[in-house]
Length: 144
Image (cartoon, rainbow, N blue to C red; front, side, top):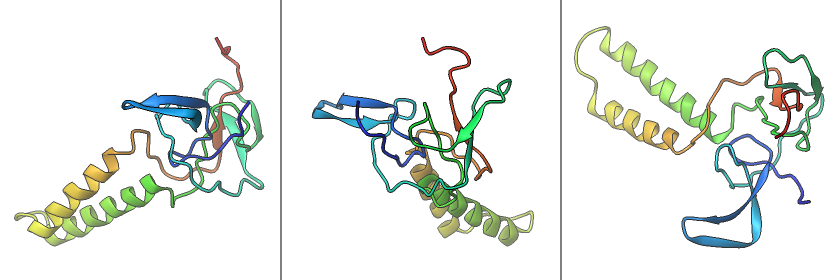
């Protein structure tokens, strides 16, 4: 078994990537099979955090750990997608106040919005607000 690592999508690695876009990885690299992410980043401090099972009808929780199945850290608003989301919101808010409900957007703001949106789309995963609890899958619905 390989050592779990933290990835830029906010998940702990839950699989191995052997090949992608014609590139073969030997040895295979840890990845998130949900978001197809393999960019390793320093792990967050999980001290005192709790992870709840992602299923709404399940009340299982455990201390947050990269070793939990399908663990997703949800407490860091400085994750790459969060930073871009904040930037996009900032530009949109500034543009809203600039327009005052009428008129055309300033060209530089329009370009900035398009640029931020394009960057945001590269994160092929959900980008949510920071949450009090992390998530994982406890196995309540089976693993098969």
